[in-house]
Amino acid sequence: MTAKPTPSTKVYKTISENRRARHEYHILETYEAGISLSGTEVKSLRAGKSNLQDSYARVDNGEMMLHNMHISPYEQGNRFNHEPKRTRRLLMHKQEIMRLYGKVREKGLALIPLKVYFNPRGKVKVEIALAQGKKSFDKRQDIAARDAKRDMDRAMRERQKV
Image 1 (cartoon, rainbow, N blue to C red):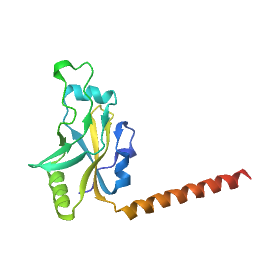
Image 2 (image 1 turned 180 degrees about the horizontal axis):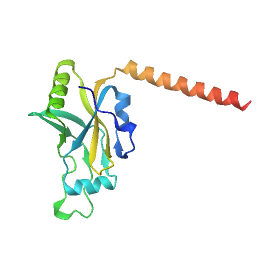
Image 3 (image 1 turned 90 degrees about the vertical axis):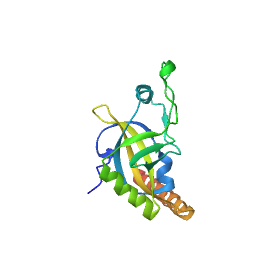
Image 4 (image 1 turned 120 degrees about the vertical axis):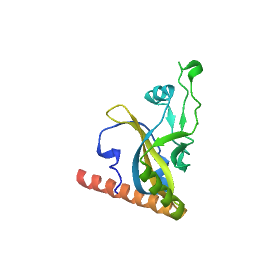
């Protein structure tokens, strides 16, 4: 079974993105999952008030759960508002969940949400990555490679001006 295509291949309205995840982890595979939300959470997401920092996914009792995702309370929500950091259920096929559970247990990998977005049909989706933590020297190598690429691009632009 292959991983579903990443949302970057299609046009979606991104709500929030976890940019730090690509710096902290080696991304091995990405998956798309639905998310079970209440009404005020969806309205708050439409306003763009969410944060994926320090959030992670985990398999609990055969269900994929998203922990520590912050969705701000809806301003007009009154008493029906939601708890900002509650645990939310992710909607995936049972076979995918069990496969990911096996990989996370055996190899010491992590499930990290990369972005939250609305698909064209108006449903909220989460892009989840199967990731492995980077060591500090890996991060330094990435920074050095990015700086070298930036210097090469700058030199090419200077050369084209002449």
